[in-house]
Length: 155
Image 1 (cartoon, rainbow, N blue to C red):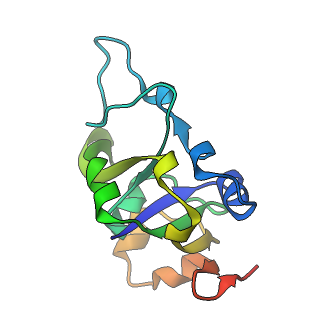
Image 2 (cartoon, one colour):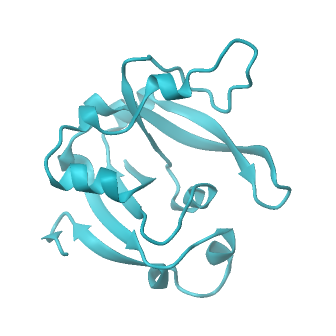
């Protein structure tokens, strides 16, 4: 199933330099909440595991930081892996400016992922926000492809 993720240059460099995916992503300890703290998602994390989050819908990317210099990654991950990490996250509603938007997402242990799942990487060349998704301007003007599985690394 095709899913989407936004990441920084450090992650892209690790991926293209052959770093094992088990060493990519954020540690579960980053997401651990103290008792009584509000949990902004439905995922359960193991402290010593690394995780990567993905959205099933391209349009959900606008809930994360889509600034120039970051990357949009498209993965094709087997459903049996994705189904284990299905949940939701609570994101900032950009109209009301409060954490109230519940968005479907996948939280996958990094060790279950590999380079073969990566379909495409696009460098964001202009800052994007939710208005970019609503305007008539083609979204292609906001990013350029630097990797396409069928063609390999392009830059």
